[in-house]
Image (tube, rainbow, N blue to C red; front, side):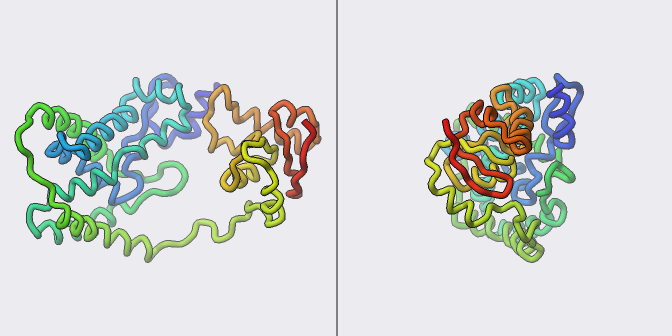
Length: 294
């Protein structure tokens, strides 16, 4: 079935009990490295600022998103509504930046936080430098993600129930500490940075890009999925198909069927296929743009 195929495709990012009971792996939210791991660990500290706007945003946002990702009953329903290819991306909506900045502002009670931040940045960068490849190889620490959810929920309740005066943030010292934490991360990252693909072999030709300027916004273009994906990044258009891994797998989209139809059109030139999807422009295999009769 489609569901089983999708589960197999994203299997290394999931914890699957059955086709009707699965959740996102806890290592996914912290997969982007040291800063994300630190932000997750700092989420519960926002309880000291639960009645301030940023604290409420961090606690409410983090607890809601993490619960949606880690509780199978919620994650399955969410995936059924928006497709698994999209639901797993919602982990990126945890308010990492606010948790990170606000947490350091609360921790910055003395100047001692600055050397502590440097050491913490070095250690976390060494342990969790980030997993940026397709799929999940080595994500963030599961325990920190669960800590952010459970301790964050407790902090949210406690922060709202106990309304006494809270410690004020020290943004100047907090910003310095945050910068010191990020410094070893930046040094390590830029020191080892290299492009995954030095040359984009799928980039459209200059002639095609120039020709596409005559296509009106909102027009439907039929082209190979790879070319379509490149054009969608550059022009305000619709395409008949795009690479399956970048399209929500819903009944309305039906990405597999669309790709097969486009491949059939490329092979046969059958005009009924672009008409079926309302395409008024076409890009041939050799990269030439033509206007189709409606």
